[in-house]
Amino acid sequence: MFLFLQGHPSFFARNVANQLEKSGHTALRINFCVGDAILWRGRKAFNYRLPFSRWEKYLRAFIAKHGVTDIIYYADRKPYHQIAAKVADDLKLPTYAYEFGYLRPDWITLERGGMSAFSHFPTDPAKITEIASQQPEPDLQQKYPYTKPREIVFEVSYNLLSYFLWFFYPFYKADRYYNPLVEYISGIPGLFLEKRRNIAARKLVTRLGRRRHPFFIFSLQLQSDYQLRSNAPFSHQKKAIEMALKSFARTSESNTDLIFKAHPLDNGLEHWGPFIRKKATELGIAHRVHFIVGGNLTFMLKHAKGCVMINSTVGLHSIRSGCPVKVLGHAVYDIEGLTHQGNLDSFWTHPKLPDPAFVEDFVKAVASTIQVKGNFFTTKGNRAAVPAFANRLIEKKVNALGAFEPMPPRLTTLVANEPPLYAPKPVTVEVEPVETKEIISDSLPVFGNTAVIKS
Image 1 (cartoon, rainbow, N blue to C red):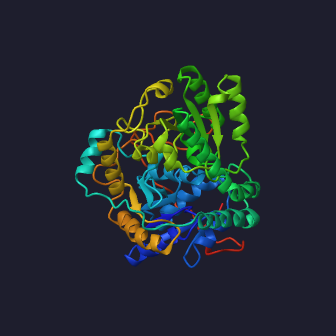
Image 2 (cartoon, rainbow, N blue to C red):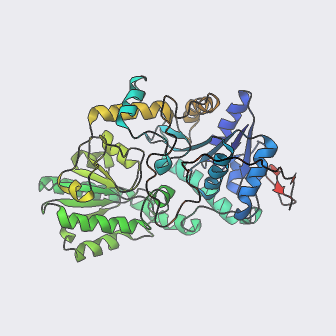
Image 3 (spheres, rainbow, N blue to C red):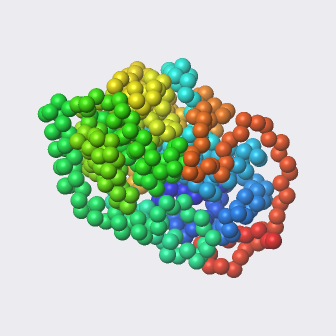
């Protein structure tokens, strides 16, 4: 029996559940907010409306009562999902986390156990090459494009409905860095400035090229990105920026520039530009440091000397473009032969180029074991991804072909600001019998079946 927890803000998870049931399996869902309930409409669901502190007890009882065998969720470090991973580990149940594809835009990531720092995908180049040798070339042609407005509509609708209709799920613990209303309103001006910003970014890169100034890119992420907050050793992205600036001032050549590029969906609340200018001025390198909001990343990477990021998927895009990469956090692609393994100081002067042959092997191994072709948003993208996604779950082929290490090999340090609620332990856990609690319906308005544990 497959149990779905929070999913991507689209109908993708519901479609996968339908596919599983067409194949003769049972798929249940626990909703935590109105957005969850609406995106699961037409299917049986249970609504969790208790405080977060009671979630573990509830889940253990739910698993015992319904005979859950597999747990599936979007984004492995959401609070409810971290607790679910702990419970599943205790009960020896597999968990599957999915997200936007590492090989995006035409792919979906599906990993057993976790992603990024918590990924079980190997880091040994020999293992990866062996996996790749058993597989055909992946289809890397983009076939399922979708527009940015389509993605924004799903995201905004999901979060604002859950925000304004909070009283249906009064104890919901939303994994939001900002108040969603403030976040979305603040992002509106950027929608009208996109063209102007892209032109300014291209002019900057062209000007540096004409002056024969080599430059590096620091690809900034959204401060609200849970991958940044849960898979990086920084309490805030500004600490990473300051560290990079100090290193750049200390060791880079005097004719080299550094461009900080904001995420395309950045809402401007963090004021990266003024902060970067202030720190660069203090270090005496303001004339060599730039901040841009727009720009064509593919064009920039063709001319950049290297790219720095915390753990953005921009890193894999850079590697595939042949651009040297330095990772400051934890990323599935931060492996010898793909990224610069020396310290940041050495990156500015001797950036290590990715090995083209190993890049091909890595892409082939990842595509065949932890990626599914398709997308969350379009009908064509779902038609491609849903059956393949469901079949991987049914056939237990997620992280197949030796692409699953018993312990996450990247899990070497924990984040400074948000220690995980749960991280895998390299020990064998003796499982105590779980006492089944009586499940009863509550009296709140419902979207599907509602269940709470009787106290």
